[in-house]
Length: 290
Image (tube, rainbow, N blue to C red):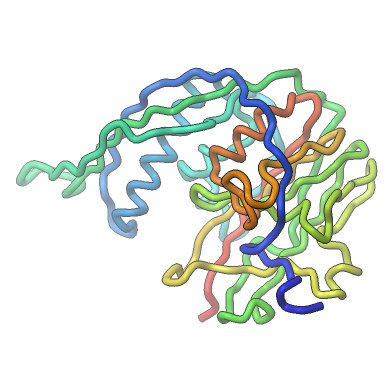
């Protein structure tokens, strides 16, 4: 198999059309995020953004007492309680399907005042769509990765750690597997070589399966230039029937890359009734080898 046909975490698949948009409620949320040691100004802004998204979903739709399976382990456990994790959690009663910055500014602290020297003030308009349907307690899915810490060793993907997901559903189900990071969602399956992954009831399915990995289809860890590490959410959505995801080649935000915005992914997810889907998430840390 040629390198051009290898599937990595950052170069994946062509996608199918998105479903109709659910009815939305839009609210404005104000966040005041103090800068603190250990975070860049960009990270402060991202924390404010994701905190505002999480607050908007709670305000409009709330959070279910019993929701999807969420797993944290090892080095990922601390970050898993962050504002970003709250904004992508699957056990909310709604999804943030779009947002716009209304106002933003950096406010210096008064001379001699305790605390951060500067605060990021954000007003965000967030549109939230409520979930539909009633969750089926008999339809569940579990997700176990081969590792929750993946190393990037160089620019050549073959040198980096690979990710293998073990998925078990309580009923026959079509499988969609994605990685969430920041405002992006990387679609791992389905892809050109795995167009319709299926998990049989009670049987563990490996993605990619062993025969495909032997042929060269592997999910390899990757990081953008200048980034030493980041936390990602490996997420599985099991559905009772195949549900087309987002856009064919040359159309929509995903186009030919297999990369969605978080809002695009949420619009797709909220269009699937709760009784038709089961979900699970695992926090994964990707970092450069030292």
